Image (cartoon, rainbow, N blue to C red; front, side):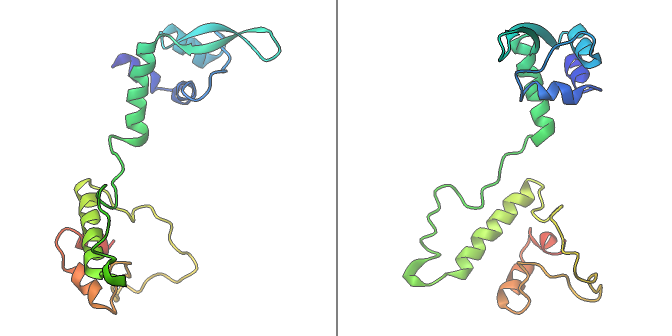
Length: 171
């Protein structure tokens, strides 16, 4: 834990860069190298550059440290979440596209299932999405538009009253 705390400190970005580059020069005079070296996060390794000169580069002190820091940083960067698939892996959608017609209720049920899975994972697909800036602000006396709340059709009213997704429709 102490090692992770030190790696996530002031020199976090330099430590993260070690995962993406293998040619970072090592210099005990560089503050971040000195700190990481003295805390046994990195070590120096002698390598030959493109011109045939010997140079010192940064490496993780050992594979255990590299693996431990990778696991700690990956949780910070992407969290412990995995992607939520819009469809079940083996769903062929045959009932949606049968008889050269689009079975909208069957498609909406799948979409509703996707939104339920997003809700169960505490995710909002519309959070932090770009918004148009070329329109005046919405009129608070009107309901906000939502792609699902198709106000002119019965589909929107159907979805609006479904438990588990109505909070997503109004954000």
